[in-house]
Length: 259
Figure 1 (tube, rainbow, N blue to C red):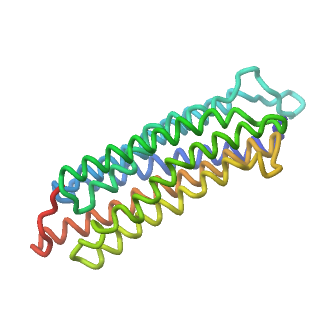
Figure 2: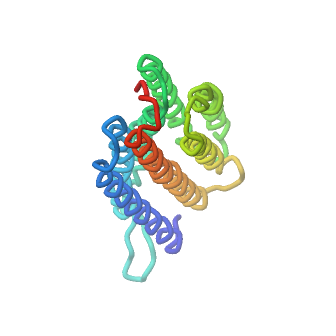
Figure 3: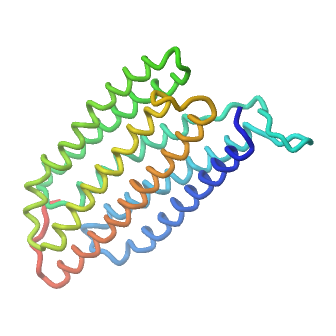
């Protein structure tokens, strides 16, 4: 059973995550007029990622508050309405492919390669989410073997995405003429990979001996922090890249990118 303290911790984290996502959305969309036409799509998609996430965090927050209630004795009790954590996976199914696409859009890639990379990364990320979700349903100690199976399955497309970001797109990254822009693009690639590496760790919390209400709270905290880092953090880095590239184009210092 969730304790009052645990309920409040998750309550505050979900509320904070919603506010952070929405604030980032407003900032990114308000800055769209400041970037060159070529990079507006990337910035709009960045804001769309955090907007979709903010909507789902609001739904998770409401679901969390509807699942528990305070009794007259000041104790916490279940209402009979289950907490719907599937909102998180619905969010990832939409935002993770978009997050990868926004990175592709700020890179100097030919149009056909940009489309190809966006498609393959989008499919791989959707497969990663779809494979991983059933494993979340295995929470008790007697069926954690099933959770490991889905974790391993989801890691296959995850490793493909990591390989593509750090190796497959390296030539495009190195083709950037401006060292500052090249550094920013490398930064967003590494930031994405490092942030995403936190998700598999949170996923295996129940397999690390964390059980019951502690597992529920740990997973909610871990995923929320990971989302803020990977969505808001990447969005702000994309903003920096679009501003830097827009300034370079304005000054005539950058070749026209084939996006």
